[in-house]
Image (cartoon, rainbow, N blue to C red; front, side, top):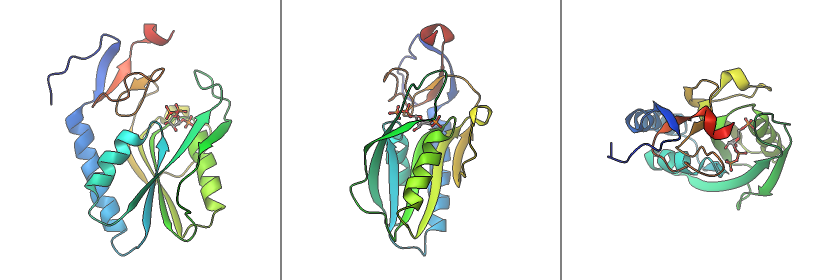
Length: 184
Ligand code: PRP
């Protein structure tokens, strides 16, 4: 789709726009079916990365839902992750007694989602599930449950569809592999 030029920093396209949109529609259909009888679904997108996936996913749902956001940042994020996560902005609405679906663009080490699951569990939601667009199994440091997964991906620096390199490339409609020379 589209005739936009692929930036020179991109080695190759891993997931193109057609594949991404097809997968998002499948996830949206599954979530819509699973929550068909359940009221008060709140999607919590994890900023910044999840805003693209969340907007597509939410619009593919055929059931009522609320959209909210939380913003986190990892300390010393880069090649080595320390696992320390900082809460920058909390959700606007309370999640107590509600059906929460955490929406993430990527599961890398798992520290972020592990932290989120712990803070949301402590708030006593009616249910808590996770929806992750891409997961890097080779990088996981902690085991975290993924209820809805888009794709498993290799351990490469990926950009696009919410994923960035120094805040660049987030809004590419595909997921590409960044050339090694860019981040080395
Ligand atoms: C990315 C991504 C996840 C997290 C996953 O966020 O959006 O939230 O890393 O990594 P982990 O599994 O190793 O914890 P990042 O901290 O890069 O912030 P951003 O979303 O604002 O780019």
